[in-house]
Length: 160
Image (cartoon, rainbow, N blue to C red; front, side, top):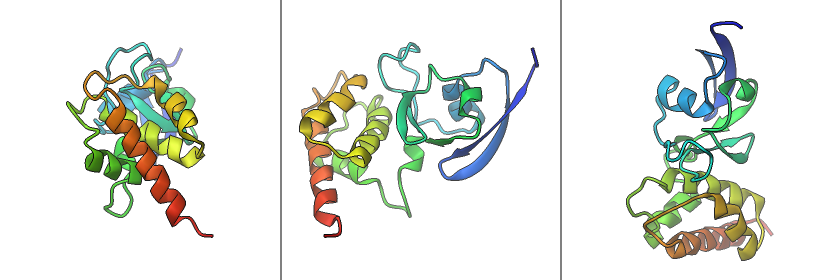
């Protein structure tokens, strides 16, 4: 088995290459190799969602994804959600609605929320899609208010 492999991916819009051990997790590549510390290691078992990133637009728990499997793919972290200096609409709504408490789960929820908004769907779909993000502070009411508000604004801003 090789000691190091090259993983080339598009990370937050920029093509990047990393030399990593074959068993390195995507979470470790993002945090340690790329220096993007938004994704957090909570449980290390894919249960809490604190390490959520988008892999080709789909939310994944990066603690369970090998970095090598992201080779050639697009990865977006919470740091990559903002565009042109402006927060993502869901991030903005989280601030407005007070959906942030201690902040540990917030990056994972923001990443998942961005994916939820991109998919569309009704309130039940949004609730189901956010089920993989654990928060011990907010009780989810403010998070769901923020998600519903951001979805309503996207619908209102959509071209007719």
